[in-house]
Image (cartoon, rainbow over all chains, first blue to last red; front, top):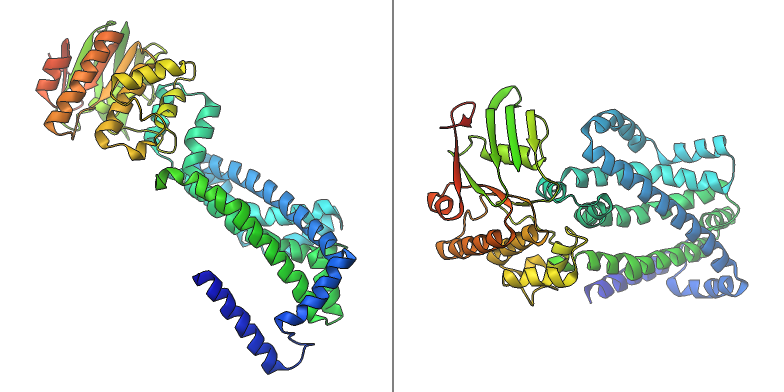
Length: 244
Length: 197
């Protein structure tokens, strides 16, 4: 209820701002977006570009989460490795996203691999940092228990380590997906010929604010759906023992 | 036969244990006594293979089980899974039967967070005995329980030990517990700790 009212408030604020601006070229009202939105759907342009961006987000998310989790876990469990890799982590954490994107395009070329690599490399340090904290907080008592009972490694990883990391994994995933799609848009803006970022670049050059908003809001809607349909149910599932 | 020969165990250069040697036969229950902080839990960790940084040698079987002071359960897995994940080859029926022995039949689908502390301790006992261990290690398993519950847990442990007959080494501060459960007492004392005659 509060969320719906809050969103309604945002919509009202937008409508008032559009009325005060009184220039649809600068800020069209929310209902003025319906016509360009329908046209983009009918022409197939919106689904086409949306799909390309989604595929990039999915690839970068999967790669960043897998590599970041493995690195974070290893660094959290092995202090010697942490001492070696921590300076690298600090460097990559503080490297501006734009620099990594430009370097990937320069070194790999203006292609899909470079685009996904740039986004993945931007997100890995963040996931690694969060998971490392989780690995440092693992219960030593459970480790001792698993050791004495000779628990198989895979069982230990799946049923002892990963559930303890669940709050950290969820945090990394939720912040990750939000950051990744924004970086994907920059990557598309700078060097791809399709995707939401490319379309925003195109309509920026045409100074068409309505189309910029249509593409941006459509993707936000899709990402909200991902949050509600996948991330939140998954979080509820891994937390169900706490609520029992 | 369990053979313990710990020549030296230090923590950050501080000697903790010296020349601790003893054997425990199958079916024997040894109570390890001594003042707090003397190194009893440290010795258990060496025997269990949790800590391998010491001078000496421990001969222990593969089939080993441990009961900690805290239940140390997988809170995110069901009561039954807490047994089956630790003993993957154990048939489900046997796991359920073990739960029955500690009075947890009917609770198998619940999470440990839904159990009382006493029930969690019983689950911890069931997990230890389910695999029919040849060596059972218990680190103050009945500490911080009220008298009635401690008595109930002692009775359970007694029955399960009599049925399974492992070599048992357990740490306790309570002489009555040692008298009731143990067939032999070992006392650690001194700095660094050694076995007292």
